[in-house]
Image 1 (spheres, rainbow, N blue to C red):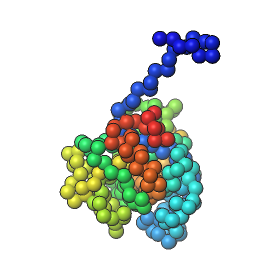
Image 2 (tube, rainbow, N blue to C red):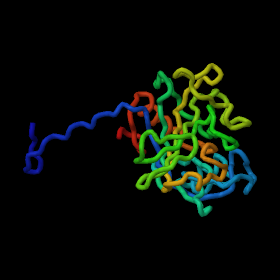
Image 3 (cartoon, one colour):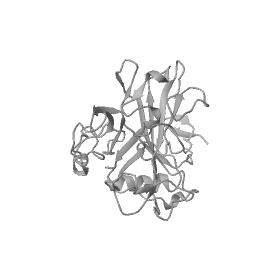
Image 4 (tube, rainbow, N blue to C red):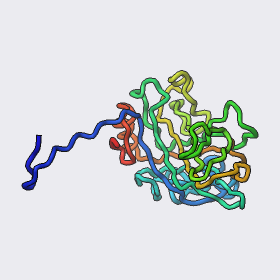
Length: 269
């Protein structure tokens, strides 16, 4: 039925359909580079290989939860004060190449009952992937592919992307928490991956799955590029959670548990 608005007949706006995907996200561009790692080498500047940082703009070896909460973020949404970092990628000329598209997805997939998913606790720290890997194997969780490239061009190491595409990296973080520790000695043992769409009894608390997706303006011979940690199968990611509790809770309540695809604002997209 048409309605009269300001003397003009217009059709009523149709309600936006809800997309049934359990997701919210943060777009966090490159911020800075440092040979620091406040999770693995806290308080030791220069002790790490080179990292590229996203989100919190002041992350360094001395970063802690307090400094993140009182700092700034380049994420959309800016309320996400978390810090994310990965090994820096270098081209054939040994020059750093930063991703021009960086998205961190928070997902409910992998758990049979998304309604049971809990918020990530404030201050949680997680490292995913293996920086010391010497070859791709069954434990390699990082994947490489080509944005706008052939769908079958996927590998655990770098792949050769054709002209007009971009090299992209996918890495999923574990989403089952032991319910006690915000970190662990190896920065992994407090977390686990789901088994048969459920969390193991040792790590009974499901939290959103963090998926980092990086797109690099790189094509061609994969033998000509490297990460600061080595070949492509050494890709890893570090996450230091500084989402405000109320904001994380809202997104889990409104997006993850009811299986609704939300944008960076935490609203249906």
